[in-house]
Length: 331
Image (cartoon, rainbow, N blue to C red; front, top):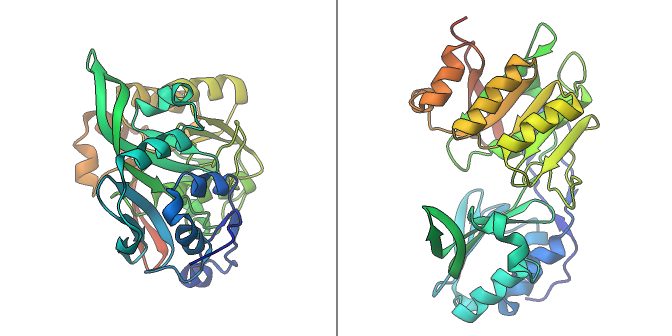
């Protein structure tokens, strides 16, 4: 299969359009050529065609996975497929892929690699696994890479419009932990929620929003600028640990709301609590299957029971997001 690749990743969702009353749009993503160039040459054409096509197997592709000795795996909205006819990943190809995703400078990507991922322009997050070297209990580099997971960001404009008002009270934003299982679409939802709050869509007024976008997935950041639409009044700090970026955003950009993805660890939770004390609402996603599982994490329990943050369980069925929110507890 031959195809000419254009830098567009699409996601068309009729249920979403029907729910929100807004038209789904094709979103151009900067750096899509770099994405395809990271794939082994033997399967670039077929993957480019599938990424551009609206009739990909089992719906829009969400992940592309490569593993040593295994065929390419496509994970889509309604299933998966193995491209066995295109061969398996070799060690030589894995080495070349690592160089490609690091823009031929592994050294320049060390800070990301030690956390097990690299972010490509356009917000494509490439998870990496293999044989790491540890020093003092910390990964310092990988000696051999055995697998890659390319997670493709989707701009679903309108998916948060009907729910945006749930993050305000009496015209002011409220802090909230948005929890869901992996794969539900927390990042997709937060991206559109930031756009809605920033543009005043679905809420009484617009707010100054800041993204603490450590992995550049929310904004699709390229050289510090977002490639995806996160709102007119949104400032982005990408590629910086959240515990560093949140205080800087508060001091320098005076946001009313900070949106961030995958909040975890004592340092990040402390920053969220401090932001709330400064009058800045924090809306952050967390991994949890239910509220009980969320509250089993001591730091998050303190945020909720102290009344600093609410919780909201995010669910998705037939392309539609729903929320089950709780009121803040304690005083």
